[in-house]
Image (cartoon, rainbow, N blue to C red; front, side, top):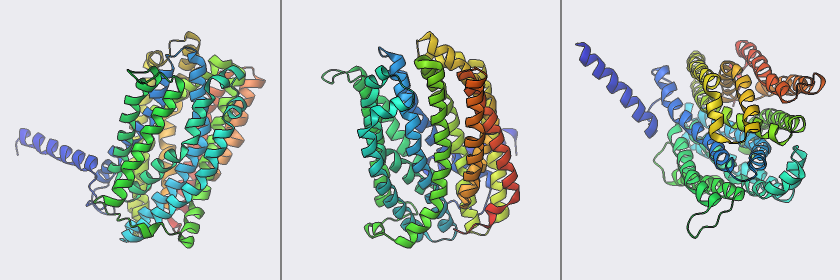
Amino acid sequence: MTETSIKKSLFSKIFTTLKQALNGDESFDYTSGSIKKAVILLAIPMVLEMMMESVFALVDLYFVGHLEHSSFAIQTVGLTESVLTVIYSLAIGMSMAATAVVARRIGEKDPVAAAKAGMQAIIIAVAVNAFMSIFGIIYAKDILILMGSSLESAEHGYRFTQIMIGSSLCIMLLSLINGIFRGAGNAAIAMKSLWIANICNIILCPILINGFGPVPAFGLIGAALATTIGRSIGVLYQVYHLFFGNGILKIKISYFAPDFPQIKALIKIAAPGILQFVIASCSWIFLAQLVATTGGDHGSAGYQTALRIMMFFILPAWGLSNAAATLVGQNLGAKQIERAEKSVYTTARYNVIFMASIMIITLVFGQYIISFFTNDEQVKAVAIEALQIMSVGFIFYGIGMVLINTFNGAGDTWTPTGINFFGFWLFQIPLAYVLAKHFNMGPTGVFIAIPVAETAITLAGIFFYKRGKWKRVQV
């Protein structure tokens, strides 16, 4: 075979694999065949999906960062996102439980049971979310003040917070239904739903924020409206494919009848998973409050800007690591334990390469990236410092994400919950407080505590991974 024909054959294989990944080829069996190809087929749409999730916050940040009183607007968006992390935690916890159970049933070649489990997860999510939405609408202003916002800033932005928390069911369903599709091995549908939601958000943001023709300028409120409408359209796309798609999951209305044994089994997996992410979220909320009280409105806005940019890079890595959850779940269901382990190592290797590249980009070009999102010099200075300090731990973040998804994909949700409790509440929060307050380092102390704690959490994850309890969990 000539060199030219070899290159053509390689290009053809790459193109075919890419096409399979983007189209969502459910004919591929993730319990056999090439592990590298399995990771790539799952990772490409998952990475693109998480990139789209991170774009939501960046689009809002860009447009509100150029409004009058931009420091108030940026702070409101950031603090609201910090509060929404609690809802994200519920969504991710339920999504993780759905992924674990659906993947295990698919690995056992029982798609009907997988579909029924997914629908029961949706019932739980809707019931839980109703209370949180009402609470957020009523107490939006108080929530912002509690988070460290000044009264003036809270008055300026509480309507944004009301809309975002009040529409949190869209956040919940978008994440949960995507988890169901990922568990079934169809990450492409999950990706496409986020693409659709984000395209709508990108189009609507400038129109609703700045006004266009007969549409009035809603300012900061327009950002919330655009995001909510975009996510709602994404959910409608998901629902269509659940009922009328050609995937392995075939949904019937009868599957929505409450199945209390199944609900109990899902809650058993989801509860520690939700707690796991609530622990992490509450830590981020505390850090946001600590930065706001020690750095003022500009310090808070700078931190929130850096955090949104950091999440833009980290969420794709989280998407890549999600491949481990699906592969571990399906292979444990098929009794392929050694294959599950190889899937973890392959995914971790790819994630380390990705995060190392991102670390270099943020360290070298961080100041230029920050300048694109805000024209306030005080905000800019804090944001650059925060981004460069936090990016030092990117490689450890990448490994830690894969390990968390390994445990959760296996249904071993208590192990990462325990790691998060000790790593965030008993280490990160005290360390940040001591550095910021006792050593008078202010926001800088908080920034330093983040990569230090994340590194410790990853090392603990490696220890428990090697102990192997995750291999023996029954779902």
